[in-house]
Image 1 (cartoon, rainbow, N blue to C red):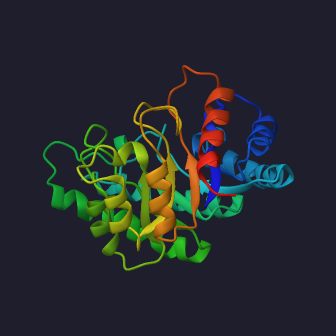
Image 2 (image 1 turned 45 degrees about the vertical axis):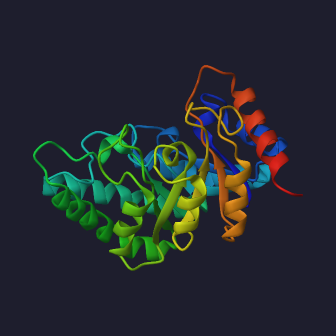
Length: 271
């Protein structure tokens, strides 16, 4: 398992300062939220991709990929009943596949609860078919760029579409593709009725990416969740992907969130 950090954790830090700090504290990967690469246009983000990739390499970091794919966008939605909206959403996501590849990333985490919520009057079966169409449009581009779309189950408190790992795996089966897999997140898993170990074991054949955080919105080791059995189960199933720290609470200093999370996880993983 390799330790990564989500870049938005660093808020308004300059990229070079954030990368140097992450590497200093044991992270070897950086996961990127697209909205942090200038929010006005994808073209602007593309123009920065090669620069950021070089900066990461110089800092001794690998860019893992993208997450928060549809955050801070307008008019994009994967379960919309409107065909034009779905087409526009697919086009945007396809461009993100290219951006991910240009950054050297290999995984894109599809969470974005607000942009997947099933609207009033839309049946769940229809919403599933709408989302399926969007992802099928992405599939040739995922394959060409060798990027994996990792779909993230989220709790019912965040969205009403794909709330459990089991539901998400069944959705992934529709594509019969090694480029559409499962992402697990500790905060989201804590809302399920199954234990962390049960969820991870039952997801072993599908799991491609993992977020380490706590239901209190802080980093691992900063709340009530004991990560020892979680990491033990990940090792048991042979997971060799990234352990990516994702935090949401901005009330604490960046340094505390980043450093305490890394120290805690590294203390649990054998050298």
